[in-house]
Image (cartoon, rainbow, N blue to C red; front, side, top):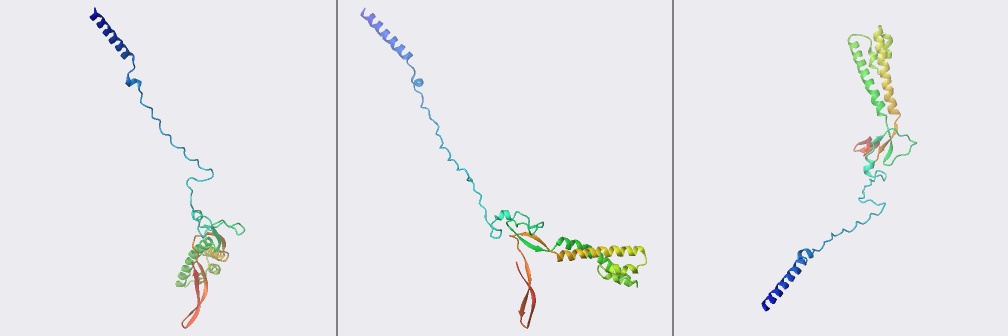
Length: 211
C-alpha cells in the first residue's frame, strides 16, 4: 500500500513538472535581440542667402578700364559703327583710322584699268599710233578720246577714264577723311612720328615710334 501511494505521488509530480515545462515560453522566443537605431546625420548648415557656394574669381586687367579681362577680350577687336557723340564702352578707346575699305576698293580698279591703258599706249608707240596720252592716269583716256577715229575706241576710252577717275577719287577720299573707331585696350598700338636725329658727320629726319 505504501508503494502504491509513493508511485502515485511520483507520477503526479512528474506530470505537473511536464505541464509547467510545456506551458513556459522558450528562452529563444522570449528574449528578443535589442533593436539598433540607425545613426542620424547632422543637418547641413544652411547657406546664407545672397552668397555663392562656389564664388567666381575674375582678374581685372590694368588696361581694360577696370573691366574683367575675360569680358574685355570677348568683344570685337574694332567697333567701326561708333560716332564721337556716343559714350565709349568700358574696355575700349577711340582711334582715328583711314577708310581702308574705300582705299582698297578704289585702288584695285584704278590700278587694273591704268595697267591696260599703259599696255595699249606701249603697243601704239610700237606701231606709230598716237595714243601716248594713255600713259597718264585717270585723265589720259579723256585726252585720247578725240584722237580716236572709231566708235569702239572712243567707248573704251570713256569706260577707261570713268573707272580710273572713280577709283582714284575713292582712294583720295579714303585717305583724306579718316573715321573714328573704337579699339580694344588690350591690343597693341603702333604710333609713328617724324623725329630729328644726329649722326656722326651730319643729321636729318627720321621716323620714330612706340608699340
